Image 1 (tube, rainbow, N blue to C red):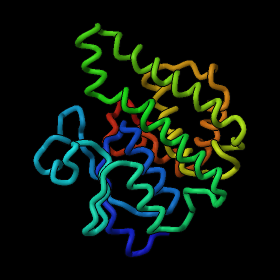
Image 2: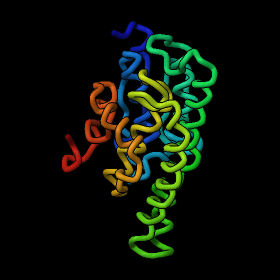
Image 3: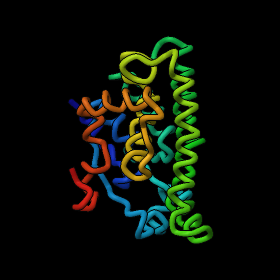
Image 4: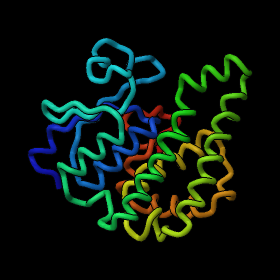
Length: 222
């Protein structure tokens, strides 16, 4: 499925990172082989001098493609989209392309940052043992409400129609985390619940999920 060019790809990832999961889905959809390099965020491996040379911000994912080093899931996916045109991640229709960008940005700017490990740790330390989950749930629910309204006129089998596009790569890990980690009641979000079931029918999505990653703890593995 992948040519010699794709064998140079190396992905620095953490099993539970939803940002890393987006890229794993993208790589799978495009049929690209890659080397998985685990980075244990709980042990602080993202703050080692070696990793900070790859990404000074100290976050996963990081993609290495020969001499090219890229961090940030959005940047990585756009790079893959331009270099590897198979299975396009963006629709040709300009309007639907814009909706994909908008939905992806709701996830990566209005939901996901509020559930990063340092943020949740801070909330728990300052406000009590259950404050982190309540904090994450609140931001997830706000974001999901917005996504339900945004996508109601565009969704088909998936977020923006009957083909998988960029928005789906951002939604799938976020919904998975909302259900598994933060126990969000998806009955309040029927559109998102429906398309999430459709994602799990696709091997490219299933194989990218946290529980199927080589660094997932045994108790979390599928």
